[in-house]
Length: 398
Image (tube, rainbow, N blue to C red; front, side, top):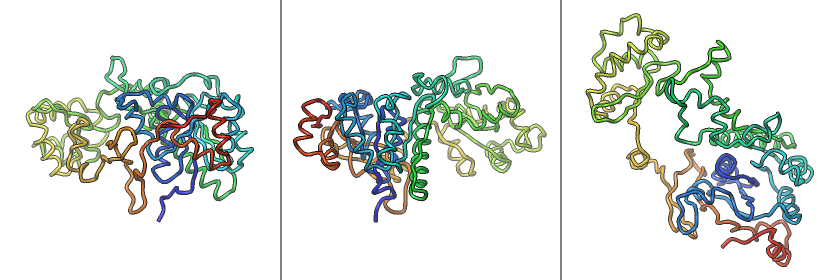
């Protein structure tokens, strides 16, 4: 039995989230992901919380990989990277567009040494166009893409999401492009070059908003916690000052929701008896529902709506979700032994398979932990590795 991607080698040249998270998703499924880092390492190694000189955030995001240090400003390090590319199946890179090309390490150079290689470049604005060199980290991509314009409440400053949406969307599309490229390489014996933009990944994820504008030319506006198309589908305040999310996205669920609140008399109201009507008359509908929900505790509401089969959930803190009995039973928190941090807890990959699925066979590497073994595997002798260490072209982690 082997994991789905065992035997696949991926080079990762990326910082922070988008590229590294894509690499982690592939590594979780068995790919040998070699994280190519500059002498100071991935910049995420400096992100808190820090323990024993290591970033726990970095460790959570870079599990199951090997780390090699290559100072790509030096010719011997560039030669080493091309040797690695010759024996690899894919490359994920998140450099500023054009930067690797200037060093002779872009897609064309790597395809020369390996015509079947899959090359995925993830950047803020993409590899072409007038903004190709523009800096584009997560928040900037969220702002430029329009995603922030619909986040928050009408008439107020847009709110940024509490999680890194553009980076995560970019990582998912990067993973998708690598997997598609690998299938193409296996079937057609040729590689692919993929260009993934964080801005465009965010636009692609804005399905409802993009469709509304492109069809009607009306500019979508922020709606607070409400849904763009459906009602009721939002957060409600409860008696105990908590917030509960409730969604009733079809007629059957709406009937169950109203019956649970004792509001059956409104089911025949022409304002509320169709999907579109409920959205048009949302304010009037919420005026009927909100006071009843506010007279009940969050636990009471959840219990009643769950019994009726109406989608609902308390707005959990991370403490609550990680300690919830459902998540405990499904083992969402995994543990792994790290050479410097000892045993650490991390959120597992969210995919479960019947066998040989994603796991945590090894923790994230310390900087340069595998430099010597990786270089040795592509033909470097001990003396050649020692010379590279002395010149600063590589370094060995401890």
